[in-house]
Image 1 (cartoon, rainbow, N blue to C red):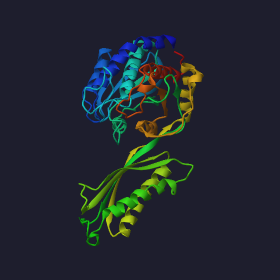
Image 2 (tube, one colour):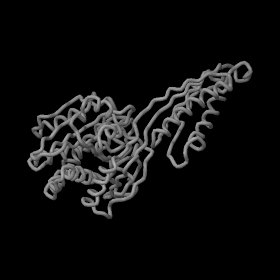
Image 3 (cartoon, rainbow, N blue to C red):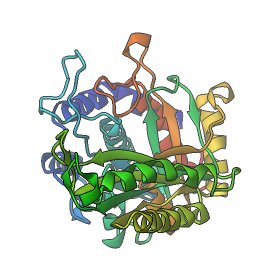
Image 4 (cartoon, helix red, strand yellow):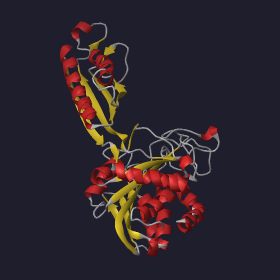
Length: 394
């Protein structure tokens, strides 16, 4: 394995160049055009023949036939960006107004490409097949993974693995958690229909704010009073819109939007049911009507027990036991859960905290950045996984 690791380390400058180019020219979910073209061209330049483009819409899939017999492993990286203005004072800050890579998808993509470069250059040593999944639209429900799977990206795949760099996790540290790791992500939109009118004569109106504000308070009890305290759930109202503000007008309707995060299906079902029932009953109590548009988003990311044990063992072997840390379930969401519904695998995390503490910001922040050396750590884990999955030491 040392030979392949050394080859990957020698690619570091190229990894940085590709990552920074992506960072300067980010593309939003479902609007990725140049990025998948660059990814496909990268494989073409390597002489790869088995390249599929427009998979599920905008995905790219490349396949390596190893020189040794074995099973088929899929490795996944996402490549979409977020609608955030890049505020970093760096040479490679985003050149696209209002769009930036604020979650590390440029790190993931450059890593996977250069892992592929190393493996293709040493394909006679590689056991089985390796499928490189480059996915679009991870940031937007229902997620690009769903469409790529429907288009057959996992056909013939035995196991699937992915990694996420974490800006607030110390560089050099790694972690993996068996079972439910990252939450499902649903959205809800509630429209309360009242009867607007003069604020000085409320007796002639049906004020939807009475329903809206009551709902805002009551929705919090779904977690605090209607969910098993030993299970996790989040119900957050993020938007409360009454239309154009006017001190002398009672609005005709109120729109409420929010998100639901859970780590098991029972809690998820209960939250959806409670939101709908609560909304209908409260609106009726005030003589008004309300509609709920509830959208199920990503499933829970449930890591396979055996494959997570594999990853945890490899993390100790590759990174050193002292660098493997205990992690807990997260209420952030990831559409990698779709892959794990179809195939056993593991989604793990790798630390990428910047060396200067002043440069450390959370994901989805305008100043988000990570230590680019994290690409080497992700890449080594991917290479080790490919060989270990087929009982090879590399």
